[in-house]
Image (cartoon, rainbow, N blue to C red; front, side, top):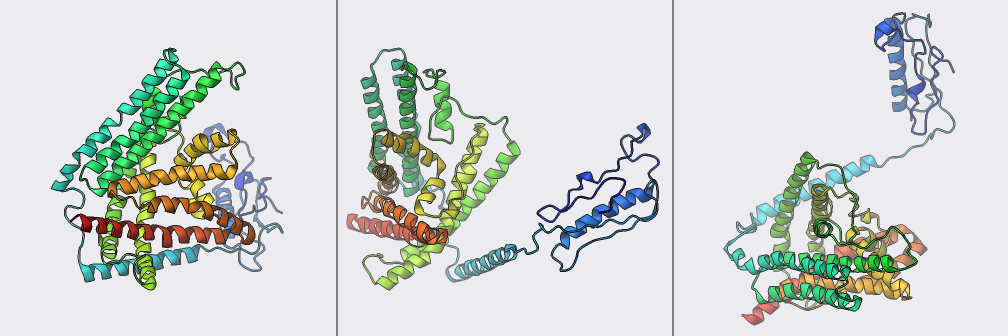
Length: 490
C-alpha cells in the first residue's frame, strides 16, 4: 500500500470505513503557523489531503459495488511529496461483502400505517362528526369530586405516622412486635380509607381511578419503608453484620424525598444527577400535553362510540363478540401505548429530572418480550423491583418454592389492579383480578413455547393476549356490567 509522507492509510474497519487517525502529516509544525500546516507545505499538499479524505468517504458509499477494489486520487506535486500521489484503498477479505437492511421496509410500514389511519380518522369525522364534548376535561359536575381531592391531600398523614413509629423504635420507646403491629395498622388504614371515600361519594370514574392509583403507590412505598428499616435495624443490631458500615437512623428529609421520587423501593440515599435541565423539562411537558390530548381524542372519538353501540361480549352471538373485540383492539392499543409513553417515559422522567433522581430505568424493551414473564419483568421496572425485593426474595428466604412465590407476586398485583378499577366503578366482578391471575399459566406456557419453538411464538402470544384479546375484552365487560348496574339502580 502506498502512503503519503509516511502516514499510512489503514485498512477498512468492519463497517466498511477507514481509520483516518493515521492520515497525518508528520513534518514538524512551525511556531508562526499556530499549529496549522507549516510554511513549506503548499496549497497543493492540503488539496491532496482533502482529496484523500473525500476518496475514503466515497469508498464507504461504494462498498457494495461489485468489482470495486481500489480508488485512486491524484493531486499536484509540492513539498516533500513531489509529483503525483496515488492512494489505493484495498478491501480486506474480512470486510463483509453481503449486506442487508430492512430500513426501507420499516419506512414503508410507517408510511402505510400513517396513510391508513389518516383515512380512518377523516372517514370517522365525515360520518359521525366531532364527538368530543366541551366538558370532557372539566365541568360543573367535577366539583362533586372534592372529597376525593381532600382524601388525596390527607394521604400524607400516613408517611408521617410511619416516620413517628420509626422514630419511637430508634429511641427504644417501643418494642419490635409493636413496631410491626403499628405498621400493619397504618398500611391497612391507608388503603381502606380511600376505598371508603370513593364508594361513599358519587364521583367520576377518572377521579376515582386517580385516587386509587395514588393510594396504591403510597401503600407500596409505606411497605418498602417499613420493610427496609426493619432489615437495616436487624443488620445494625446483629453481631455478624454483612456490612459493618450499616447504621440505623431515621430522617424525615429522606422519607419526604422517597415519597416524591419515582421509585417504590426505599433506601436512605439515592444516586443523584448534577443539575436540572430546564429546557429538556419544558419539551417533555409539551409532549405530555400533546399525547394526553391525543389519548382523549381516541377515547371520545372512537372507543366510546364502539363500546356504546356494542352488546355484552359474553351474552350474544360469538362472531359478533369477536368482531366488537377486534374493532376495539386497534384504538385501545393506541391509547395503551400513549398511556405508557406519557407515564413511564415522560412523567417519570420529568419527575426524576426535577428531583435530580439518578436512576432512570423505568422500563426495558418489553416490546421484545419472548414470553409473558419477560413482559412483566420489563414493562414496569419500579413495580418489578418492589415485587422482587419485598415479595419474591422474602418468600425464597423462608424456603417457599419458586412457583408459589411467583403466584403470590401475581396475587398482590391482581388485588391492586382490581382495586384500581372495581372501586371507581363500584362494581366487583373480579374481571381485572382474573385477568392478572390468568397470566400465571401464560407465563409457563410461553416459557415452554419459547424453549420449544423459539422467541417469536412467545412474543406473538404476548401481543395477542394483551392487545387483541385481553384489554378490549376487559373494557367491554366492565362497561356493560356498569351500564347494567346503573339500569337496575334507576
